[in-house]
Length: 234
Image 1 (cartoon, rainbow, N blue to C red):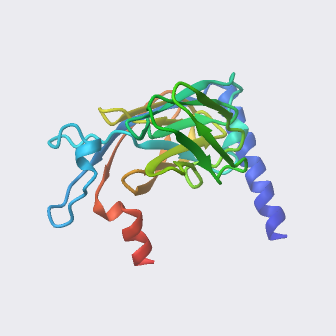
Image 2: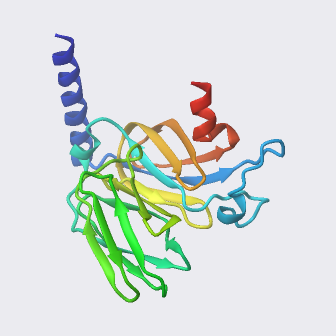
């Protein structure tokens, strides 16, 4: 009986949200992601992802809305194509945020032989890529913030990349200014998830999106948000 009630509640929640979308009741979610340092617990990745220590704007952070059945509210969209290079023994960019069905073209600009491999995402691959060539793959299974596709090179263990795949359009990867902007979000309650995979940071915040408004948020991360720290506390 309880499971039936939960399914009914989820169905009604989606129905209400769809009605709001049809009525134009959507809002915008925008904000900035910052990192607040702690001199007693230095974060060794800050020099790579924070351009200005004074403002602390955090680049290459994946920001996404989370809610049960969110995909049911997502409008259809044509598939997009993204590029990732293997340059100077690094994946560039090392983090991508895409929608299920999108394609990623991974090329090799180094003189060395590289490899592209993963066991994540339901469609594992392990392909060698010589200089000037590329590997093309469509990512059809969404893992959201919890289950990114972790990509590596079997020849060079320090090379790593993360591809986050979503079944809705309300996500973004921050640039140097740490800012994000998600538009046409159905009004309602959400969890705003923030992940910095390279720096091993993770945080969530409950938010309310109001119709016909720009809902602004500032998210400050700190050493308290390190995933290793949270694991040790549990």
